[in-house]
Image (tube, rainbow over all chains, first blue to last red; front, side):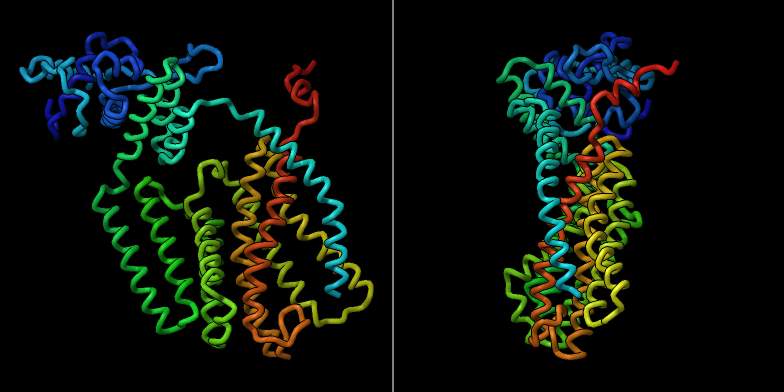
Length: 107
Length: 366
């Protein structure tokens, strides 16, 4: 699969984290904690991946009473293909790497 | 005939004030009941999310919902601050070069307009510079926030009225440069802020006011009716119609200002079943009526002054510049306050549902 821009380590980490269980819907804060990413870095990544059709999102309908429904994310078919490609590449070993929270260079 | 109208207006206003006060108090209680208690991180993030462009609304809602699920206070602060940073770093529409271009054009525009106005109409320099700076700043902010300007008929009406207001002010100051004495720097800044504010509401309305087209159109129509009322009251001043016609005109002149602000707010509030919908119609009515009445006021003042050298109310033999001060006081002060008070009352009454109405509406038909 051809990519027009090189993905940042943070974006790659998000894709690979979601690819661990591609069928599962994940919360944004859950991904923040798993990847040690700041929400200010994670949400722009999620937004851009969704814009590119690599992620699909939905609202959690089972939110407790009095709380707003949370947003859930999972990979689309294109996202899974890209994650598979990234997992096979040597540079993909970026998960939980120290320094992931130092800034965001774009998706 | 004008004094009869004013006496009746004041009488009706004093009677209505009690009702308005009661209605406003109900509105405040309604809003207070609707507002949820939120801690500072939630309020901070909500403010940042409110400034996001429409197409990123879901993104903002997602962050707010996620924050609501975090119980730990320090973690809430970290989450909110990080998200606020992300919203501020959101790339502007067209990218950073476009933003720099718009910002640069705004700065250049202020410099050019200052020189041009200073040479052509010196009395308008402070206004021109302030207005251009404000519009430039708003345009830069709109680009930074990826806001697309509204281009519907109500927005076009307000924009045209603002342009007309500037043209008639320049014309008055060009014809009589001594009128600049009635537009000191604070008044010029006040006029610039008022007109730029109208443009901002019309072209890039805050999200809370963008509750649908109904309010915009109702408000715009109300403003046109109010401007027509203003013109009618100016034109009838020197006329001496027969008594029955006077009585009919008095009723029209007294009732129209109340109806033009209260009725649209009531209708919008009732149709939208919300106070906000009614308030939106009111804000649009006030926003459109400010430049429209101002643009009607000054030409009428110049026309009247050319006849007998008197001010628009016919009371004083004074320079035409005196009417500039009156226009500022009435069109950008008294009328908007009057309209807002009536509109809020109309919105409260329109959105109010009698006790049991909701229950009856939900009950299935037999």
